[in-house]
Length: 381
Ligand SMILES: *[C@@H]1O[C@H](CO)[C@@H](O)[C@H](O)[C@H]1NC(C)=O
Ligand SMILES: [Zn+2]
Image 1: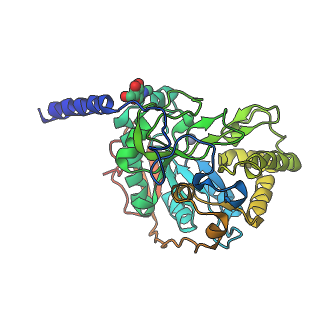
Image 2: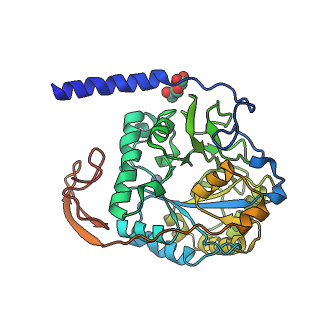
Image 3: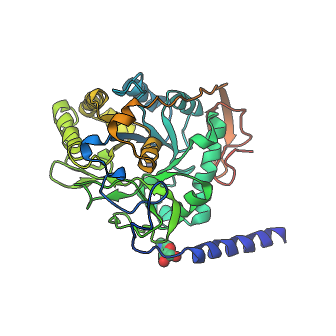
């Protein structure tokens, strides 16, 4: 009975929520202003000239964090500083499976941002395309508690979302973000707005961004920010949202070719409207293309030496967009200090998985879970 009631009320809440979402109207700039609203736009927030605008570089890596990919993360990112002496940082969209949470703790303590990429990372894109609000809550809102618990990082340090396979789910993920208090999404590619690129914006009003992987949101959903994935242009002019999906790219060993390829894409932003430059990639792709690996290192060295470019966490970009300040003011700001968190590492297992006939082992900074954590039981209680 209790169960039946719960099901009925869940169905009711679900349909009420869907019905309650108002259609988004065309954006009216007089009704949409910072810090909480911005129309889909290529103009610089705050109205600064490009020369007075910091060029942000957002470097992200997706999927499980473990000993295999940590080798590259450490060698590529350790002890990097921007020209304003503040630590340079990357953003990690983490999935639960095959993640070593002690390494997530290490990345956090090194100043990087930990963001959400779902608990299950289900391989079916239909699952993600059709995911409703409740599924999004279980995959992402619950993942935030999960990652905070097992990596021992503050729950309020987790702000970002990227949907698996960049598969959008209409309003559902943004509705989840609004109710869970998540700040930004980096899932939505744009091919049309490459030159000039799009700056981050909100969904109070109807987005005018092209919908590359439908369905895209059309409801008015105040709160979350879209950080558009301003696509790169490959060697034949085709768009690619992630570096590893560029079809025509330099040969794996061609460091010079890769460096020029990266710089050409960077300069479209840097010499253009300074919209954030995204370097979105998977670790395996960098590992199998040694030319890219060295070119990326060289590129980050270039960025770290420019007086007007900054390699920062994605959240810092939305912070700046909400409260924009000119380059000279931004440069002189004190660096953000992060309290270090301890990790009393535990090696756990074998843990029974709820779905597969399979045992898992986990490295965590908490006590060991009773069973393997999964959706509907993110802490493995
Ligand atoms: C998003 O919400 C709007 C407004 O309620 C609705 O018209 C639209 O169909 C929804 N999109 C999807 C994919 O459900
Ligand atoms: Zn992924």
